[in-house]
Image (cartoon, rainbow, N blue to C red):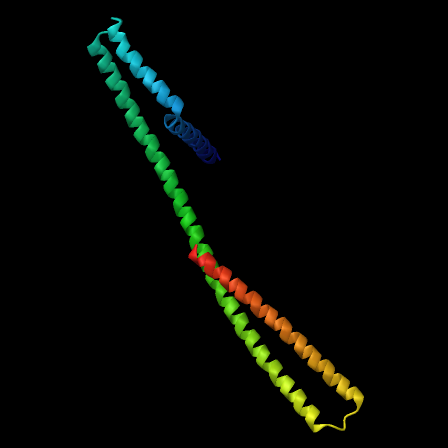
Length: 182
């Protein structure tokens, strides 16, 4: 239990340090930072002119401070680069997953389209059979003819629905192509 608590404490401290580093990195790249650094350098060079500090001593301190700041800035910038790189890798993985999903959907749509074409052919065969039956049985009574008319109507209605489905499948395929291009 103590090891888990210690790990949690370490992770919390690391998280706090990362937030501080992100804040410093953000501040360094801001206008207030530019103003503060400019004022700092101006004051540094004014001190020897006002005979408050010797010029050599001021340059030594200024060089040391600027060197330390550069070291820390390099570390903060590298941390930001590393974080950005991790985010980019995550995004690339998401894009790959989306592309795989699009390919699967495209394959499914092609299969559905083939099924619809087969159904269309079956409907046409049924229509031909109905027409043959009508030709062969001229002596049919009116109720049989009514049933045939109803069958034709249903077949025609099914054809229209299938055509509508085909149109929607084409629409989906076009959208998939657009997504692939993006």
